[in-house]
Every structure is written in structure tokens, then in C-alpha cells.
Image 1 (cartoon, rainbow, N blue to C red):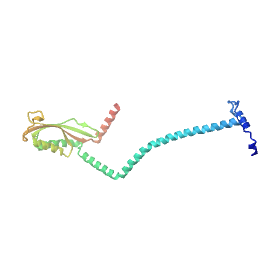
Image 2: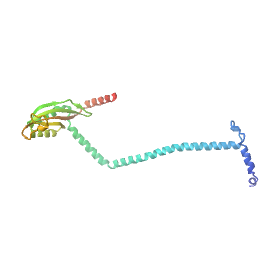
Image 3: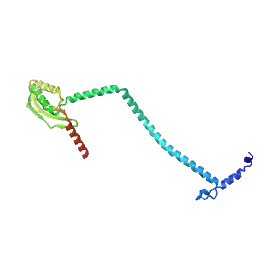
Image 4: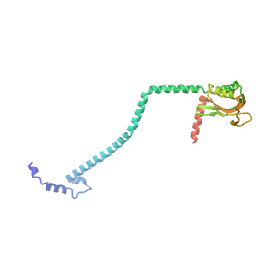
Length: 233
């Protein structure tokens, strides 16, 4: 206690500040104790502060990134939770869709069955007493997984027989669709000439389109053609 009472603060501050005068910046190792310790403390504090901000900045960026991900993750979680809850129903729907697709595929003839299908269309017209004036299969159009066969047809017969023929075609076991139907009376070239007499002989022109699935070799050819076309782009 006596030493603290006898301490001359003015002399101490004068001695402390005097140690900072005439310092040789080229040789800090030769500095008096006060400036050396002060410089050490300042450098240490700056190092800690700069390091802290550098680390904290990276952590803040990472934190912001995680905060931005949070709504998306919550939405994904809710979607997956809903799927998990409805999983039995989704599986049932998937099974129903697969069964429906299988039924549709069964309605598409194979390459070997096309002749029989063309014969069925022809027989449907003959069975209704229609006279075929034109029955000309066109160029096969290849799609990704099926082929489309257009058939230009022209038949003549009574109104009700033509109607029954179109119904028979729609009820074939294979998919056949009729397009661009035109029904005219003999000696006319448009629908405005159709007679009201249902027993009169009429003429119908149409494009029948039937479809078949591709065999594995044809599917492979389609894939190769698509890949070649993609490379040319």
C-alpha cells in the first residue's frame, strides 16, 4: 500500500510516453518494453479481430444459405409426407394405369397382324353391302413407339349401311379411326348434294388410320435415327 501511495503518476506517464519517442521502426526488437508490449498487444488484437470477422463472415454466408434452403426443404418434406400417406392409393392408381395401358397396347396390332386388320376393315364394308371403289393403304408413318397406317377408302351404298359400316369400324378389336369424311350423292362433289332419301345410293370418302406397335428392331432404328438427327443440330 505504501508503494502505491508513493507512486508518482505524472512521472510514470512521462516515463511511459518517453519510451515511444525516437523509436527506430527498422529495429522493433531494440524498442523499450512499453512500445514492444503495446505493439504486441495491438497486433494480437488485430489478428484476433480480423480472424474472427473472416470466420464469422463465412459462417454468416453458410447460415443464410441454410435459411434459404429451409422453405424448399419444408415443401419437399410435406410433399413426401403426403406421398407416404397416400402411398397405398398411389400404388393402386399406378396399377390401374398400367392395366389401362396394357389394354390399349393389346388394341394395337403387330406388324404381322396388319394384313388381317386391313382385311377386317374391308370385310366390315362388304358385310354391310357396300361397294368399295377405293381401298389404298398409304405410306406408313413411323412414330417414337408406334407406326401409323393411313388408308384411303371410298365406298358407295345406302345411308344407313354407311353409318353401320363406320360403327363397325369403331368397334373393331384394333384401334381404327376415320378422318376427313365426305358423303355425297352421285353426281355431286360436296356434302350439300346429299339427298334426304336414305335408300338412295351415296358415296363416302375418308381416311382410315390404324396403328401398330413397333417391334424391338424398329424401336432401336427409331432411337438411332433420333440420335443422328440430334447430332446434326
